[in-house]
Amino acid sequence: MSLKKALKKPNERSFINYKDINHVQLLFNRINDAQADIMSRFARFLLDEGKSVEVLIYVDTKKLDPDFQNRKGISYFCRKQLNWYGKPKEEAYINFVSRQSDLMVVADFNNSFHSQWIATLSKAKTIVAPFNECNKWATLLIDTTKNDYNEYLQQVVHYLGIIKTK
Image (cartoon, rainbow, N blue to C red):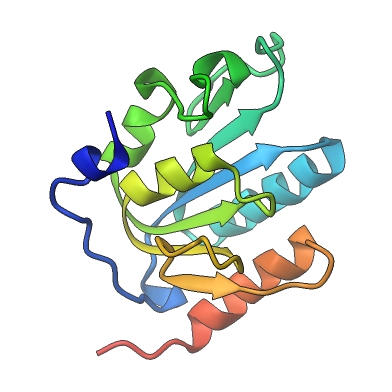
């Protein structure tokens, strides 16, 4: 199925202030343990703030290691669940994109096709992504130096906190 067909009716996007966010979705490519730890701390921060968090993680391996088993609020997918041009198979993402959420944070500095696909189909009201000219599906783009995950996530919270909504 093409993205055009999948988006029969485009999802409406809007800005939201950080204090009004209840449900957050995190989408990222697991590169290494340090980066996964940063994302884990961010998820814990959001939970401590009283927000519900759902995470979808891409692991660049042919088959998922037993360490990467889905558990409550965290799902994984791997290369085996992508087709030949990088589109994720439905079982990898369908539950994630079908849920309504206030915010989706995409932490993929490589701008992978599978991240673009999932974010485009998402029902999130606001999508934040790293700055890239191809990220036309995002509501808010954040530019960081040297693809720094800590800086990116701090800026996500900062800019969402200063957005004024009616």
